[in-house]
Image 1 (cartoon, one colour):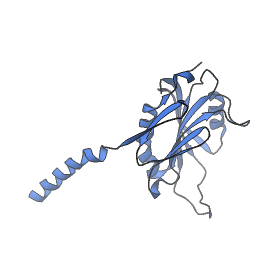
Image 2: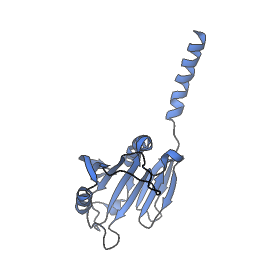
Image 3: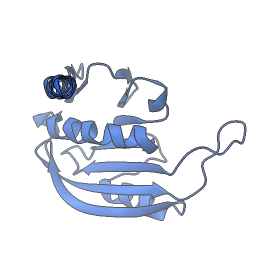
Image 4: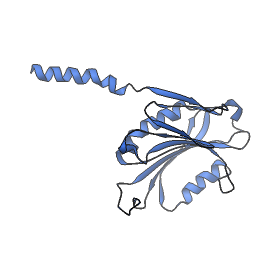
Length: 180
């Protein structure tokens, strides 16, 4: 009985510690956005994007990205075109779509499931399905818009989803990029 009570006490004491995650804040050098994410996630920067990856092998293929559109001639020109392209993709099924507010802006949140069988680089079947969540923000005065995306498979996706929601809740987009 004493051992059971000691084990229960240890579990109760360690529960808050498991929930305590350190976060890192990254502000774009030009002040376009600030994003907060778990400190143990790896950050990489692109021309108009920041990508975040959770640690460990289970997180391979799972990640969060914040991308600014349009870029290039084949890029969707506005949020409606971006959402239309998602809906037109025949291997993706829309699980949900709703209007939300994030970063002080109106946005559309879409959850999708990839219906095609996933295969690795050697043709081996991968665990699936691949799931994606998009938050497509309303356009800025200059016509650009941001998309926050989470993509992943299985347990790694499930583990990253609460952090994605936290990232979305803490995201700051520059006032100079306010909606039209």
